[in-house]
Length: 224
Image (cartoon, one colour):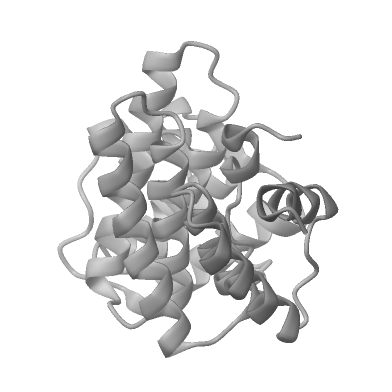
């Protein structure tokens, strides 16, 4: 049986966007390019360039999900932020990259710090694009991931309720199997197994491929 922390960990949304191969990043070798928002060493342009920012963000998604290249993905998301500091996809991308990188941090305190940083970027993205169900899903999963690592029961329950509410709202905006699956996982971690099963059935109805380990684990909880 999988541990709860394993079930909820690393469930990040995969958003595939086309790349723009003609777009390049200056000062490619500068290490601060690989730190979100350039590690605070640079300021965004006062005169925003939304079109160029959009292209940079698209390159970032291409690097992240098609090329599995976190370093260059962050460079492009940084560039998108610099060109337009109000581009929600720049913050969204930075939040996703930081969250993925947090999984490889051995020190639990530093890992939690990275998770918190990821959440801040995702919260900023969500505040700039409040109706984007995909950003909402990413933020809710980040809350859930943090909750699964907490020992404080009260704080854990608070975060899981926050994640649950966001998943429900995201499902209303854009009903997708992955949203209901993640809502099922969120309910599972609140020991609400009957409700979790109902959401899993919804996910299945929307053709989401249910992970066998999770399905068996939930069945065991329900004695099915």
